[in-house]
Length: 280
Image 1: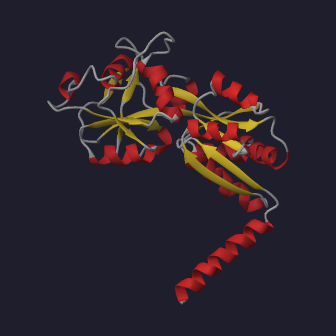
Image 2: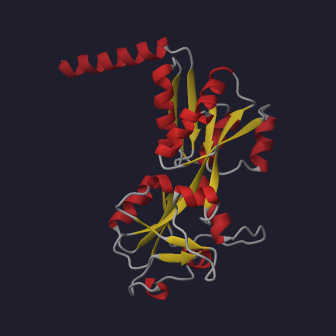
Image 3: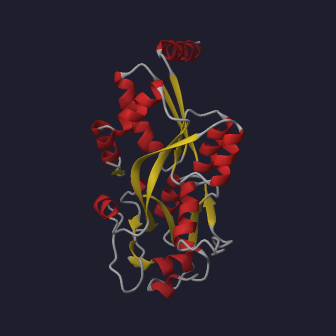
């Protein structure tokens, strides 16, 4: 009986809160950006009556929600594709792009892995399955376990285009068939923390002491850099990218008010505190 009453109380309070909010803003998309945007939303809701719901699922899923009209704001760790813009326009939706932060993609291994630095070429060879043993990179004589985000992830697409294909539009390189496709950045972080043979990648906001970030260089003749805020801001870290909001048309009303907060000094300070790089 107590449990039933408690659940009813939670339901009642939740509905009272929602009914008191002037607007409900639905934000969907990039898993890389979920923690960041949730932190922004929580701070914003302390001072405003809007209720903001933030859910992940990947950049592709978010953009799909924009096209279907089921999201007010989409989080994306990649630029929207031309074919996605065309689909949106067929539904009389004009995608509006707002860069809100910068991010560095950290390449991570288990802390016990002796490998500390890799070039873009070496990363491409690893993730396409052409290098399969850590011994080839100065590590132990053991098989490399490749971890990747799923194909609907903007992080997956960015890594494929900028690392595997090295920004060559004619390249057809793909992730190795042996790569384990995981549903979230946190899933990769957890797997690397428990698997001494694994290598994966995710937004540097997910870094912890349970993983070791690899230093990355463009090539053997270049300097190696860690995925840090300073190195991303300066452009020294080779695997960096902007993070976007997309809205159905130019934002107005409550949606514009929230985005203005995100781009404000206070909002960009939250960007820094969550280990991303301010856009301003």
